Image 1 (spheres, one colour):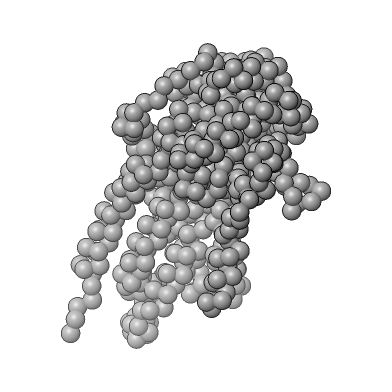
Image 2 (tube, rainbow, N blue to C red):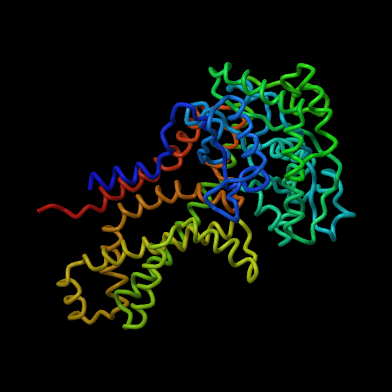
Length: 491
């Protein structure tokens, strides 16, 4: 057992750093042109950030070693020393510069609107999208724009965890536009027909390399390598190979080579200034409260569905004939044997060609159907825990099967099931965080966005934990009180 655990840990953990390695973190799930598995050899990576990492490693006399990390966790991972540098289309921002060592910008991107071809004449600017849904990635410059300016214009921002599904949902009609980097928009246009990207920039930003705050020496070396590659054309060559070079880059390079370390305060260079920690926390509190309400409503509705379905499944398995029991048993085993995240993806994306469920409905069904399988096992065990003597007595007294279930077996089984039901609801509250993959911005997702903009998980994490405790504690207390009230009398 100990040997198996050691092997699992060794396989899950990134390779230990060796002398001469430049460990760089990125997210291969982000795909081309940043970082992706080479289709010809999935063991190799390709992308312009992969080539830039190799360029930096060569300049530093090291060997590049890739470390996979989630896009939204790259800044915190590099801060805690999981790797030396992070780069995966990472945007420059005041929050990052306040918490990390940040390189000079090496690429300028434009935030652009992509719409369906049929709507290209109608939706040209953010102002045209009042009352409509606009998709983007969470914790990005585009999300900041939509959650501030967009909301003020009456736009409903929709947050995604990747850059593929926003464009797919745009074609399906679930959203009316996508606001993302022009690099991602060009990739989507080449992948899917029926989309139009307006060339005008809603805003501009820059990609940078991130390092731990104390690694200012490494930052200076990275800056020197990037400036040298700008001078001799190597960076231009990389971006041309990936069809990402455009007329914005020479002006950016001229500013960087003239001595600019950041263009955040330049016209069109992004958000200037940075609110204080507590000011930003106060700004996010209403959003966290709304997200907590979404979590509570979703979890309560999903639990109600799970209880109803679970009770029906349990009764069917106890009282049903052979084929009914076999069918319900198969449902329980398949549902418990597959991840709830996979079930959510199938409901929302896999069935989109047949039925286009709204995100909240898909989340409700996914959680409810999953937990119904677990609830059914609790209720089945509780029903079978009722003493057989009581059931025999009920039949002797002339009670029907339904009367016995409703008046004798059911109430006692509910008392047995109350404690595990409470545990399941608390677990469901936490599992509701998974529905962010369906664009539902619940408490954990909103906390993730808050943490990315603040540059630390300390305050957002504590607030999120406190809110989950506030949501779950009253139910636990109520269940404990009911258990004491309904406890069987002792002899």
